[in-house]
Length: 322
Length: 278
Ligand SMILES: Nc1ncnc2c1ncn2[C@@H]1O[C@H](COP(=O)(O)OP(=O)(O)OP(=O)(O)O)[C@@H](O)[C@H]1O
Ligand SMILES: [Mg+2]
Image (cartoon, rainbow over all chains, first blue to last red; front, side):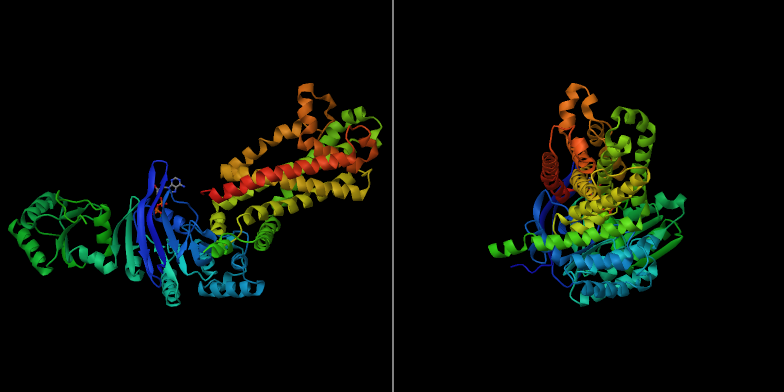
């Protein structure tokens, strides 16, 4: 019998011509935070909707906390909690009433539902606003109320679709703390996020999804290691750009890329300082002076840009198919 | 394995009732918190009642002669009650689409509750609101001369029957809402099926004056049957003497329509609800 918190196999869901999910398999153990990354339209929300019984896949199977969500949705719903991408709270009820209703729908008595509502309100620091109608809440407060709602039923597996989007940095840190607490209490969390730094900080495992396919998976460190060591970054005056790219490519080979937005040239540096020295020698020999030159460890952003192909590559033979 | 399936597959009737009650309460709270919902639902039929009574009351009243105390309002009010139930049912479609748009339906669908609870909670709460609106309409009716020839008790019985009819129509509108998905579309799509029901009926005038090809439909369709049943209850023998059906036949025919509409549309709506992708 499987004890995986989430296990999905070959999940396919198309909307007309759009292949939102094109054969996704994913599995992870209880007691961790799994971070799902992917560009807009990658299929993150669709996957969460399938796993939380809101959407039937065209093909594939999905289990949450050992329960088959397709065969036994009601039982699966008892074990999962969901905070969707946009806050799903009732404008005309107070924060307290929203949570009380949800507690009641989970089968709690009136008293227990009230107690539970107060607990989660407190955890989300909404106690002061508990008796105000939600229509008076700010966007961030709604978001927090929505998170509170997803916790009312003490789910075994909690699905959070971009939980910190639209939340100020201070509250974001609070929510990170809260998620860590939940995991300490035995909850498993699957979250999506646009903030790679968030996945880096929080997630025990990271999956990258693009065009409906899971294209990479591992711990944040494993993914960074696949980048192959450090990165040398430099910028030059626009007039020197072409010469610089040419000189570096012929001296150092493939893998050099240019980010037009940030006007940064990146050179993979598996041996760290050696490549940095090679870069500076090459530039020196060509009498090119960079406006900026530094070496740094790869971040999840680098991984993300590389494997989702969103970074513009300067060389034709960019390596790194995995 | 089989026992655990039976145990966990859905939820029992007892839980379904409990879940429905919780959602009725939520919707009722919205009705109270959003006064426009009750206000506009009341203003419209009151306006219709007054306009029809004072604009057409003269000419139709002449045609009615001395019947019903010589007052058109006595003939009109039962019909207006049925029309109120019809119009109010559109709010079921609108309210559902608003919940869909706000993501509230997704939240409900992620909870371990009965499949029917969200729709039943909506239609029942809407029925309660319709009862309030009809009572207010009745009060205005009394102010402008309605005198309930059949007595107050029978008038109240008529209102209850009419509320049940509104409840059945709410299931039709639940399906409409789930199909069209946006509040604007729900509003216009909701009216469409109501217009023929409303005008090819006895709400405003006795259907004798309709062209013969329309008469067969008009005298058997639910709105006419309900209006006539209400008149039988509220106006009493004077009205029944003009009818081919007796009061008990009318009541049974009304209950048949209410039951048939629910039997067809409630399962369709619940099915659609389970499959709706917002
Ligand atoms: N109900 C739907 N009808 C039609 N297309 C849909 C529907 N839901 C999702 N899609 C499409 O499926 C694809 C995946 O959407 P999804 O919402 O899962 O992406 P996402 O990874 O959550 O994106 P984002 O980061 O923008 O939230 C998109 O192309 C989207 O347009
Ligand atoms: Mg999304």
